[in-house]
Image (tube, rainbow, N blue to C red; front, side):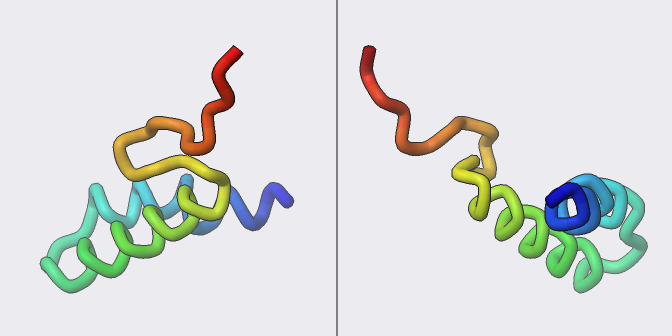
Length: 53
């Protein structure tokens, strides 16, 4: 499970932040957002499917 999170999410942040060309940045951001989406988090950091209490 940790590998599914670490590589695309954590490393994706670094790849996007240190990208030297636009294409590398775009690819890293797409992979990062896709990884966050798998865990129910939208790109802005809000959790989807919140259940009212």
